[in-house]
Image: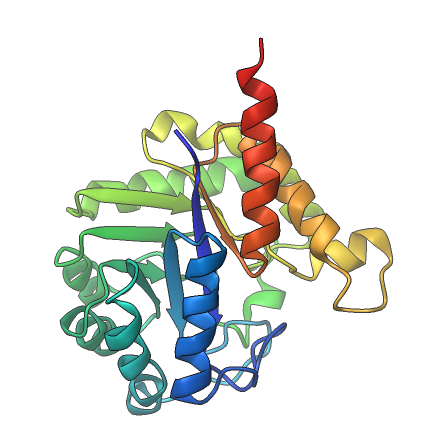
Length: 257
């Protein structure tokens, strides 16, 4: 089965890669349509930056940023709402969103309740908030701790389809992020599809000593390659067309025995 490509649509002024590009409703909707045309199966819409150090926004402001975009784009593709706020999740659901992507992994009990109303949910591992997560990277055994977190949350979540995201870059150093990418298969026996969000993140230039923050496509595709080879089934990316071509070629190669 072909992997799912999730196109990133940040309706924010301060996201690490594309902050400020799609802050108007019109620009955001057009970009979402472009991502669909390029091959995105799902559009993941976020109205609050989760980059390290980012400031929080109110639930009212987040709704202003995302709701009209969700309403319009839900006519063309399944919509995932990227939020940590139960109210924003509920309003997005009423506006047409089908998938909840919570970077705090449903640790908020209210969000756990809200998740049950969605068709699908992404449980991501993280620690702290964007303001504090850089200081929360100490683990005794990072793989086992994330595995245990997933197992614990899965016992409480009643959603029919659950994706597991190890949270690359969230309360993880570059070395820890690379370790997780190289060992993503450790989560396979939890019997949930694995969801990878490594696109253009800072571990790429830090690892490759790249100064220009734009030159991250090759590193992003390498993350797709190593996790696809281990069975990951969804990829949340900025570069939809390139990722689709890459995955289509990988599948074509594998199909020739």
